[in-house]
Length: 267
Image 1: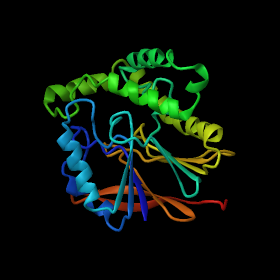
Image 2: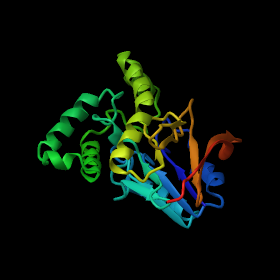
Image 3: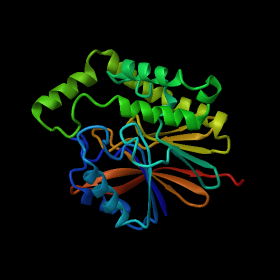
Image 4: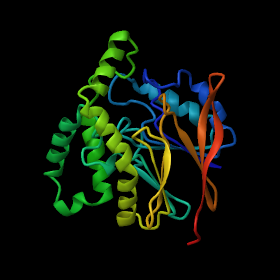
């Protein structure tokens, strides 16, 4: 079985994952595990041995583990996207769907300036290519690190995060707008650049859901391991994509009820 998770944000003070062993029920019976970005924070506060520990934990329990890069872990691997099921399922973190990567962030203007500077050194025609967009997004993520140490669980750090998230009010409005725009933007990007994709699996915005975008692909967002919205997992077989809720039971994360079953059309 192939399973996709995303936005674990391991070692982040805000994640519900306090012990990697909490993930073990989600790994049982899985032959290939894909972590679709933001497995952990690699830009500040996390040492390389911590990242190694996360990778070793997962690889000791699943025969094949693939890490797709996200904006928080731009150096976790060199894999920025995956085409699965004979090209019918496209997996990518989702930040490239936005011109400034994280439009709800207080650092959006800084990100925009960095991206503009990076794009200025690239031929305009190349900027439309997905490979270039992924590369520039990861370079920008490296250059704009979080102002608050993600691993800092102090009361002061929690207050600062609350302030950064909810003030000014446009931050919250921008977040709601990103939730609404991601499915449309992801479907549009797939139609233009990954036309064989019938299903697009994203993360990034921490808003779990399934959206049908006719005549384009169905878009899935797996949410995150943050509360209160939580997350979904995606299982892929030869001809189906299943979306299931991730539930927290007795301190562990388990496979919950089925949200959707999407039949893949023959190619």
